[in-house]
Image (cartoon, rainbow, N blue to C red):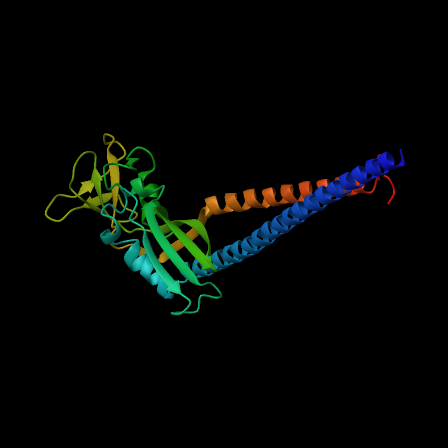
Amino acid sequence: MRRKARDILRDQQGLSMILVLCIGALFVALSAALVYAASVLTANANRQLLEQEAYQLATSFSDVLEGELNTPTSSFAAFVNDSFMTSTAYGGDIYGSPSQPYSYTWKAADADTSGADEITVTLRRRPGEDAEKLNLSGVGQSVSTKSGWRDQLTSWQSNDYLLTDLQLDVTVTATKAGESFAYTVTYDRQVHYPVSGYTFDDSTTVYTWSNGTNTFASPGLSSIYIKPEDAERIIVPHFDTTNPDKSTIHYTRGARQSTSTAQIAKSARRDYCRGHRLLYAAVDVHSHVCGVAAVRPGHVPKG
């Protein structure tokens, strides 16, 4: 009988050893899960820090370019106004369709990029909301000789008459330690175009107008004198798009769009959430196991 009791105790001690080993293995697995979750969170925190730094670099550089854009004496404004916005080399139909993008990249080894490894500026031009008012492809605006036409012609010829002829997209992409952020600002360009002449109705003959008078003249042709009792005629202005008044050029900020590498951002958020879930699950299971281990099983005898 005593021998049988010793055998039972020996068997229960073996069971206790197995239970201890299982709990130890579970602790090892949970510790590994905790280490992995912590590493995921740390890696994401570092990546988000770099992404935030890239964002700040892109936006701050964009703000600098905005100031340069409205400074006529700056080299950036000179390139944009004298070349990019007026040259068909970047797109044949300046006032009818968007241009091809033009990009330039600065590298840290070549110039001061203010902490970024690389900064790329991309320009893109598109017709503005008032492009059709230039009457380049038909009648975009006109005035009747029966409705205050002299005031309207005076307004068209005034330097205060500005047209939003073009839009300019400026995209700054900053790269820092492999993380990139692209920041785009759309600008509306306003400028005054001198009136090169006027046509009447469907005629293509161009006349000039003597300000404050009712007289229109064209070389080699009889002048046109507008009388209140005459039949209605339509006066169509034509603007000299080859010679805008550059002193009136001004850029105002329109819609703003910021884009990062969206897939990377989504992946970072997904990994971040997954890391949190792993961490919380591991802590929860760890606490549960510790609670179980703290309770001595009733069938295990005291050593």
